[in-house]
Amino acid sequence: MNRNFTASFLAAAALLTSGAALAQDPPPPPAPAPGPGAATGSEKVTDGGPSAHSQVVGTFAITWFGVGDVPIAAAQGARQAVATPAVGARYWLNEKLGIDAGLGFSQKSGSTETVSGGTTVTTDQPSSTAFWLHVGVPLALAHAGNFTFLVTPELNYGSASGKIKGTPAMGMQPAGPDTDLSGSRILAGARAGAEIHFGFMGLRRLSLEGSVGLFYDSQSWKASSTQNGTEVSAKGSETIISTSSINQPWDFFRGNVAARYYF
Image (cartoon, rainbow, N blue to C red; front, side):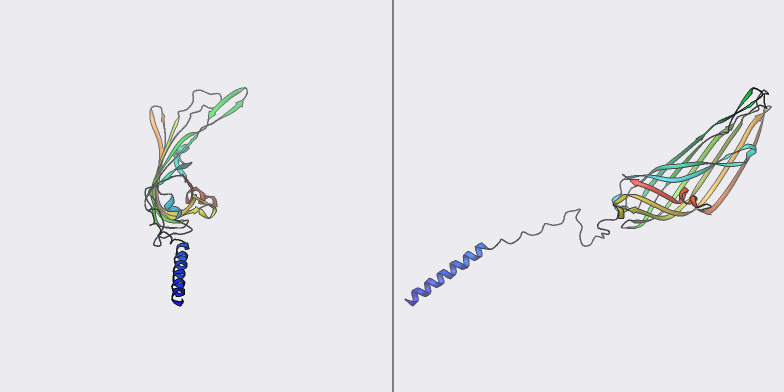
């Protein structure tokens, strides 16, 4: 009888063991392999993800390129400047190389009226039309988080033209000859600075760049008129090599700071 009891006990133990094994949860499936866009432990991830600069590669940004002072002659050949703000776009071809292109335009005209003894004389103010073309090649030297350190070789060209209308003396005719005004400027050099994306505010596509640079600046201007069949002209020129300068506090915003937004 002991033998039958032992056999029955062993059979019951085996049945309970197999039931407990069947009642256990199945083992978890193996983890899937990371996809091509997934981050791995070897990637450099800052501020919760890739740098702000890497996220704007292949996109356009509307940007401010500062104010170009285009020279133009004044009366008697003196030099004056036409402030020409330039706006344009930046496009990053890859994380290292980008392209800048901007254009500025300024046009001015006006007149004054003088009344004397019932006679009205209308005098045209000197007119001017100016263009400012900007081309640059930004080079990103390093970027991490919301910061990009870059150097930007650039070339700027400005051209201006205008006219001083000949006016008669009060109540007298005919008017004197018109004076044609012109001027041009070539500004070439390179800037070094940093672009800061507003990622800490949740606006990584909005950025602000501050920079300083070294430039070659060539300017010329001319005033000419025809009097009694003879051309009379006065002209001037100057060449400057210097770092970017800030003569007044607001000059910093005329060319040393640029705001842009990436789309």
